[in-house]
Length: 422
Image (tube, rainbow, N blue to C red):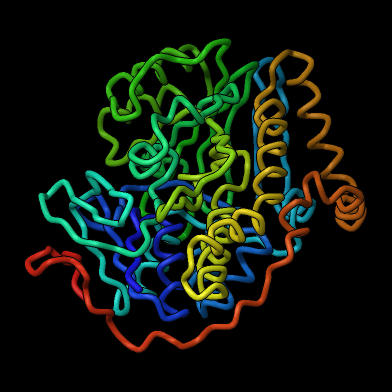
């Protein structure tokens, strides 16, 4: 059975791993000319995703690339004293098992684990998908697949082709996120420092294995901004406008905008599809059910979704008419609770008033003084709140075989393989 996966970031390679383990022949097509190594930003893996990583035999590699951020220090506009927090105290309220890792590092780990058994085609994208599985590519090539899976992120091309324009399913939840690669001029290692004000927050962090640092910006606006998600020049202009006059190291970071090798800017947007399957096509990760970047645990949700989708396809013998509904039913509650959590987090993460700014400092100091065990116990009272990840119970799908080598490519001869080699 031949399956085409669109997207080689995180959900795509994770899905390819499990599909291969279940005996399916997998091709992954990626629009970018090579595996993306463009700076990226830190993402979180919580218990269910960490359990899956361990089952993949990749725990050691993931732990070796963790960011190691242990302390947060934030200044508040109008206050003399900064607030400090041990990250461990905060994270243990969310999950008993957690790793923060750079997105690009996790993507590379998943890719390296699958590159010998999966055909990766870089520098191409899907142009059309017929009801019977005939796929044409931007390159002009065509091939037939039994199933097509969109793992191509919030602005999914597969979703657009099959379900319609993104505007029909996206819900902006009030904020924007930007990440900039900058020189580590503060010498940060194991610490994130920053400044927060009403409706905006800026921070900077580094890690031992990074040559540079990342500056991260979160801000809220009363109305949605008008820009295209590929218009970097406008995005940089908007970032400058919303952080103009902010102190701390913000002016120095803004000087790096025109020199940075990597820049990310996007709305914190939630996808709300009633179903993410249609015919031979389904979606996984942010392409189908992004709860909101930076606020909803979308990376963990994507890893879990990939595991479940591959498992249900195997459990139903590749019959997508049964497997796709089972996949949606199995992960549906996790998706819905992640959406609810993300909306609440987006409202609380960035102070919306002077009172919120004061309350943020008070809450951080309280967490810092409470015993860690008491913080965990309070969080566990409601698994539908901050402990939503640890409340997920994974099914044990029987793996038919381990990867035995590179799968035969179902694409026509002459298709360009991964430029990174195998």
